[in-house]
Image (cartoon, rainbow, N blue to C red; front, side):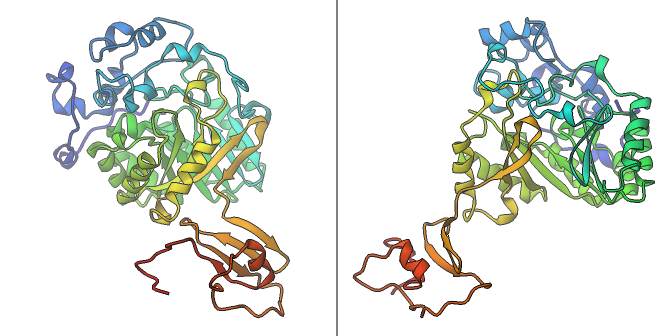
Length: 425
């Protein structure tokens, strides 16, 4: 947890609030907008949460089951939950159900084999020039689909000063490492002085160029982004920060203000989302999420296929669903708003990008492509020459095939009624 910070007068005046559950109507705004109060008043039991929302039997049973992954929900985030709707996308991300007890094919506690790629405690070195540096097991709230549920939320597995020393020594001794990603848990739950100490020591490593940090705390507890935090981080550029927003309903005035502070400190912002069944697995939701993020100058970075982690089977979608969503994004919204859909492959395979197939065929000197509308065209490879004469358009009255494009007899295939309003011929 960060050291206690104080809000400036300007910060107090600028806070615009989302809905607050009546349970906390008597809490002064100064406390409600204090990240420390939010963390200290998290809810985690059936008795506490049932006062705020109407729990279903499966939620109630899961909350009373001690062996499940940790539950902690900030009052701010729980206030965003629809108290009567079991399918509320906010609710399903943080409230457990009995489905977390179900096994499924491919399930694994360490689904990414991170432990196998860990040369020292807390370092995951899977790619040649970059490492993952885990610096805490604590989070502001706990996502039910968490990849690291084997570690996260467990105080006995937290990292200490000796771990930090060993992590930094490893990075220092491997000059090929130019990029480090701080994660956990959530790095923003570290005391601010300890976090700065880590940043300072990393910046002293000559070959380390970029520091990144992944966090979901601004979504669970936006007030943790104080001016003091921004001023501290600004000293260690180039510094990049990825937040984790899964649904448009998580984009509140408080989150927007937190991101604005980070942007004013010169911190580029990205977003990493997880594709979750029944929560954000439609083209419409993803379009709104991605365009809303870009409006607040947060670049959609990755859309993850949900991992094969224990307890998360009911959140997983078919891979075809992710491909369908990407089909519905490309060409329909700005390229800046389109994330890369990836599978973080089991057994340490790393991130593998997936996309609809826009390459239909190819030969040594031609590539047949389609666009998002179904328009099919041929692209001449610059490394090869052809003696074929390219005809200027489709021969009327003749069926055109992909082979005609490859052989140079045609240069495109136009779908019936393609852009009638723009193309009269």
